Length: 308
Image (cartoon, rainbow, N blue to C red; front, side):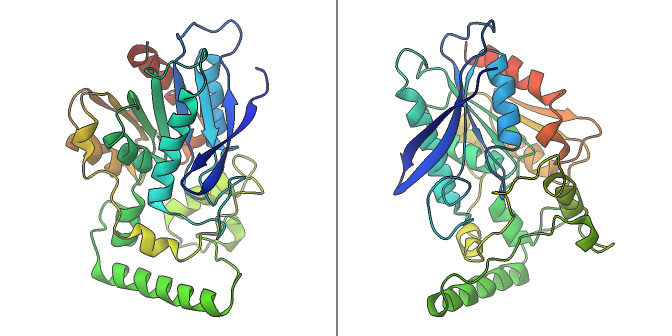
């Protein structure tokens, strides 16, 4: 495979950095079909997004992996900010960029893949952007529900204490920032296994096994999320209007052992046809970041069917 082309494009007032992968020589002719790949919360394009982009390019698609605004090589301050509405705009802006590639990309054959939090963001984007002709997610999650519920686990429900705590913490952070700019941003979770207590949330143990090892470590992915992100996330919801994606197709891929499986299950239930929940047996949330044994071919088959 040839090296990707580094590209930039605007999103609101920010400049987004991306890597565009062209179809590999000898791959099937997909008639200009292209797929946007959006990365997880605390991630960057060089991690799982690149793995999926390469798999799609090897199968004949144009694939665009990019860094969200405030993150990676994209512009924006404070660094690491998780702003759901900016994230959704980044995805739409990536679609817009692909439509400018005259003679390469067919604007009527553009799909989107969202991984983890981006599974939620891409759902929200597809609900209100009919240029997205097919949506797929991998290990999808909703940062709004995570914030309101105090975690990602299915047994957690909307919790007034979790909401109040998040808003108080965010407000205090904003006040501190106004008086002492450039305060060090806390990490969302430790990635050094030796720093994780024995009773740590298993979701974060799994996260550390990916981000804290050679599997997923990248210098620009430090898991630092400004606390002001939480009052941006608390009133956001990825899947409230999932039915608006239809009649365009929806595929949600998730591991059978993922703590986040319930997000995909309920989001597919809320959607209209055509839709599919594809469960990979024995895999957790983060396993599907770099084990594409089943998810990769499934995405190729899916986009091959709906973008042809």
